[in-house]
Image (cartoon, rainbow, N blue to C red; front, side, top):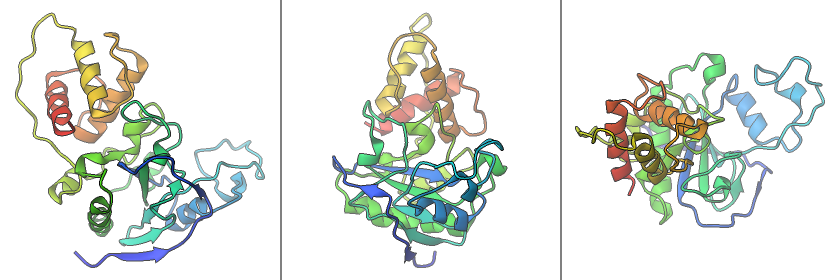
Length: 259
C-alpha cells in the first residue's frame, strides 16, 4: 500500500459545526468522472447546464440553480485524495438524514466522497488503489477525533435509506473491516421465539444500530427502507427488505457490535 497523496482543493461550501465529530459518512459521487465531481463539490454557484446527467429532467433550464454541496475529502480512482473542506468545518454532503435519532448529520460527520459512477452509470467496481487510499485516509482520521471508531463509519444509504443507495452493494466493506477501519460482524446462529413481535424486535435492533425507525410493530416504509439499506451493506448478495433468518441473525450481530 503506497503512501497517501493528499491534494488541497478548497471549496467555499461549508459553515461552522454545532456539535462534536462522531461519524464518518462514505458516499459515491454518482457522476461521470472525478473532474466533474470535484467541480461540483467546489462550485459556489452551480447551475444545471454545467452538470448534465440522468439525475435531472431534459426540460430543466440550463441556468436553473442547483444546491451547493461539498465534502471533506474526495478519493479518486487512482488513489489521489483531494481535501475539499477542513475536518473542523461543517461540509454539506449528507442532505436530509438522521442517525441515532438526530438530524443534521453534517454537523457531526466527516464526509468522504468516493469517485464512482454509481447506479446511474452501472455501479462500476471500486479499484484497489482507490480502496487502499481510503483505508489509509480513515486510519489517519479515526484516531484524530475521540468520538470516532470503526463502528462509527457508515454509508450514506444508512443515514438516508429512503433517498440514497451509496456507496452501493459493490462497495467492499469487508476490506475496510479487515483493515480495522469499519465493522463486519460475524453472523450469529440464533433461534427466535415463535409468535413474538418480530417486526417490533427488528425495528428495535435497527434503531439501536442507528437507523431512523420507530418501534411500531408495523412494517412501514421507513422500516422497509432501513432493512434494505442494512442488507445493501451487510448482505449485498440478497437485498429484498424481508425479515428472514439470515437478516435477523446479522441484525443481532451488528447491533451488538455497535453498542
